Image (cartoon, rainbow, N blue to C red; front, side, top):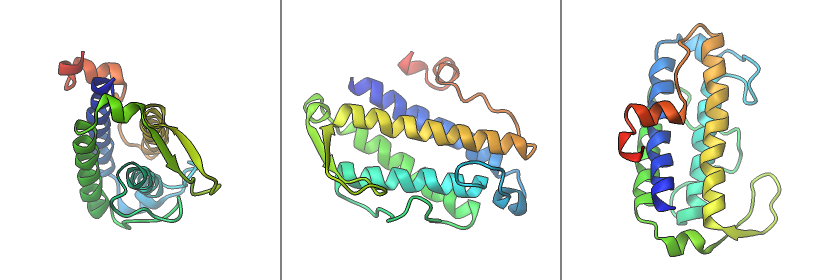
Length: 169
């Protein structure tokens, strides 16, 4: 099970790098253009993914900053957002590398941002949600990117496993 989550952490880093590299080719106006994604623009969507990652990582580790709102803009320019994304991906990988099977089976208690009730569930399925959430919104970022004339990226896990993720295949 640990290798499964290590693979997802590595895949997440890889996919984010592809999206951010493509986003860097857009103009500032294009990055800010509302294209109908859940968080509007590509810049806002990328910020949301980082916001959610920080909220979850605070829940998982009890360390770091956790924004109080899901639509917080952490960085208003792509360069600073890219640096923060790289750092967060490294943080995620390091934390996953330090997990044990016992920790994955243990309970996690937290309160959602939108509906602050107490939730207790095992870490493993919660961690699966964490990575699924990133993939969901990264898909919206990709759709926004291509609507703005950017490249159509191959972000499939299977493609990752055939290229940079060979150690997981």
